[in-house]
Length: 503
Ligand SMILES: [Zn+2]
Image (cartoon, rainbow, N blue to C red; front, side, top):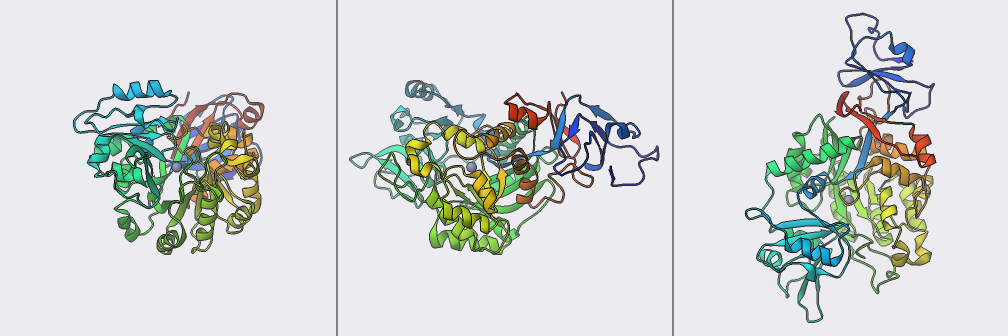
């Protein structure tokens, strides 16, 4: 038993909440404990169920439940997640049904028709060529189809140049097909009527509701629009946010000049760059050609330009994150990040990493921001893309940990659902790549994710002095995950306040 305050025996001093469960998974070694008490948003006491009887204050007792430190999604896109809920959901549609859905789509006022989730490549002809601009993202968001009205609105014509880090796909005669890759998508969407502050707040609020129900108490918004920072302030109390601003946002220098801001609810302390695209759409940047295509993918920001920009942000005290899926992108990211002033820099995805890059990433103590459910999504076709030789470089989570990397675990929502329990399940036994043990996986969603957000002294453990961010599961996650049994969230507490459940 540990005490943060000596005054709890005084009857006038009440706890704000006394939580009693079957077991606390505290995140640190110690005797078995079943109860904790909260005052003013912090855990002030942890102990046994018997000891809890001597305390006064409102009680929540959940039989059979196990409380873990509040789960974190260390790689999320909350703005896109909320926005996608209002757009066309094109997941799983065959080309015919997809074309049909797009033909029937409408949008109010001057709004563009937007959607996401399609996956079959090579069918931009499915887009209706109406006067209403239409842009729909592939499931990985690194490819989109834009119809002629959208391209026209953006001033893109057959003769337009490709932007750095992007591509407008053209047919044999040089005409635009409407398929856009990476930064080319940004060019088109820059012409869309800008979302209002109310739009952004509504999207983040809708995302928060999803996150709370999934057991999440914090997220890392890994490509935050500068305009989302203000919108996030309206969500304080629901979710803790560590924002890494979009390194391509036209307003990014406002953030750079203000310097990193650490705050219990909303930290703005990082920047995100893209060194490549995604494997599914063959825009991930590989060191040798794809096994199923005669090119190496699409390099994003790299070389001296990535170095110059990363140095600028790191010198100002910001955490630098680089999206790297292909092995060539990972090598570039590690090369640049390992030479920066140390501010807990991160390689996001780190999906395909060659052996020498694994060693360099670990030796530099970089964070590998991994999303286990990508291994599940990629499993059916990853061998086609990489060939059998390179397959052993994919999802090497155990090797990364052994080399000294710190794992922060996320979902990449809305590309994958924001579901930390699914991430834990896949992390232990992925269909491709290397699994990790339960404690390493849970730490990746709790303590290590807090460390990656500069918050490890306040978050990531159930112990006196830590904030009362708690996820309560309906049974023991160690047993459920090792046995393949179901596992569900019964309650989510942020700062001692229930944001979901208890049920
Ligand atoms: Zn992402």
